[in-house]
Each structure stands twice: as C-alpha cells, then as structure tokens.
Length: 384
Image 1 (cartoon, rainbow, N blue to C red):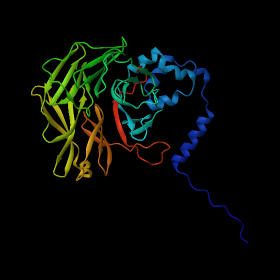
Image 2 (image 1 turned 90 degrees about the vertical axis):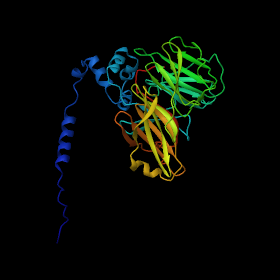
Image 3 (image 1 turned 180 degrees about the vertical axis):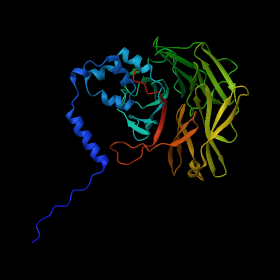
Image 4 (image 1 turned 30 degrees about the vertical axis):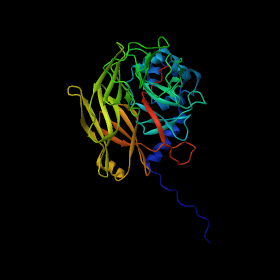
C-alpha cells in the first residue's frame, strides 16, 4: 500500500531568500521614536524638497505637519535651491474640457488632476504660463484666471478696462528674482493691456508704433515665448515677430520670411534661442522640421528634423500639427484621419520621443484626444 506523499519543497532563488531575510529583519527592527523625533527640521525639509513631485503629494497625506510644508517659508527656500526640473505639460482633452491631464516627461506618465476652482459653466483653456503658474482664458475671451496646477492655488484676475470680444494672443512673464508676474493680451487691431500681479490691475503703457502694420495678422496657433523680459508673438502679412519689452513698455517688429513650403509654424524657445517648428511636405512625404532664428541675418536656419523612421507613418496622409508646450521641451500633436500622435522634442539634446496615449484611470483603454495645452515648470511653492 502506497501512502500519501507530499511533493518535495521547491528550491527558492537567492533573491527570494534574501528578500525574505530582509523582510524579517525590517519587521524585527522598529524605528526608534527617540531618534527620529530629534531629526533636524531643516534637513528634513531639504530631503522632502528633492523628492519627485508625485511622491511629495503622497507624503502630504501622512500627517498635518507634512501637509503644511507648502506654506512654510523655510520649505520655499529649500525648493529654490533645487535645480529646475523638466517642464511638464498641462493639457485639456476633447472629451472633458473641465479637467486637466498633466504629462510628466521625466517619468513618461500622465497625471489626471482634480479640476482647479474655475467656473463650472464656462469653458476655460490654458493659453500661456510662467514658472509654475498657468494662465487660463475663457472661450469668450473675457475672463482670465491663474493657478498652480499642482497645488491648485487659484486667482481670478480683475476685469479688463478695454473690452475686446475678438480673439486675443496672450503672453506671460515671471519677474526675475521675484514671485510676481505680468500677463499681456494683444488684439489684432493693436489693442493691448498688461496685468501686474503686484498692483493687481490691468494697465496700458505706451502705444503701438506707427511702423507696425495694423491690423495684426497674429498666428493664434503659436503660443508666445518670453526671453529676458520680452514677449515674442508670431504674425503674418508681413511675416515675422512682434515683440513687447516689458521692462520699458516698448513694441518692436521684425520682418522675417518663413521657411519655404513650411506649414503649421509655431514658435518655441530654448534658453535665449528662438526656435521655429513646422511641417515640411514634399510629394507624399511629411516631416517635422526645426529652425533657429539667426539674429544677425534675421533668417531661419534649419537645425534638426524628425528621424525618418518616425516620419514613415505620416507618408501619404494629410497631417496637421499643433503645439502644446514650447519651452525647452516641445510637445507636438500630429493628427490626421488615420492617426493621432503625441511627440516630445528636446531642443537642447535634439532628441525625439513618442508620448504614451492619454488614458483616463477609469476610462478603460479609450484614448483621450488632446485639444490644447501649455508647458509649465512643476513648482510646489508658486502661488497665484
């Protein structure tokens, strides 16, 4: 008679044995409260300030003390010493205009945030940014809002003194060495105003020079770029740039011919360099090209192209391009009837990378179509 026999124990790998041994060791060595309660506060804040942004928000739910770090002046000083992170992208999807989808290029991950305290009845879209703040404008081009998408610090700007119901271009500047900011709106008829967060008012300083042709045929597909306190807007007829110097309140125009056969042109920046990104189509082939402005000759010089292997899927298709962020990293949306692609271009490193599809956490595998967006620097201490 053969009795019941148990199978021989399976042999565990060295990694599994070490994991089990370390687990028992951690469980047998609880944290000493006497030691950790005397941990230096400044060192504690220095460590927290250098954590990834997503990790910090998980830490906030641990206790009230950690949650109160955002309002501490000492924590703000620690954050100021941390090197600037890669810009993130705040976007709005076609499926839900009242909620934002934030893309973190360092982790290649989408974050779905709670809606900022914007008016629920109005459709508000991100139009520009500066530092860690994003500026929103309602679809009627009447009301402006500023918020930090990470902390949801929010402010509704006062009404403009000049009522312009047509579409306006918007730029934003963060004052150097200060937490204050300025926002400028520009209409095609030459009207403009500047909002100063210090005085909390709209004002118009100076006037448009007579040598700048009115009406302005502004390129609303292109977001403004800010370099050294100046805002650069793209225009046509004549082609070139309209520049506002916020330091002296003066306007200037540069006539710059566009690259031949290029379409869907948008401005970008990398440090003090002014870049141009657009589509170049020949026969059935379409490619994304990058140009840099040569300040001496006032001409665009091609400096890079999307790799051929990435351009192959555009062959034979009618592709349209829009820019969802143009500061250092450029987020491009490339769409046709057959495809919807998001691509990030690192201007300094000249690297192209595909962006994973934006999918809602509880939305199954349905991809979200990005409608518009802007880039911003993730900052925990930026306040509207």
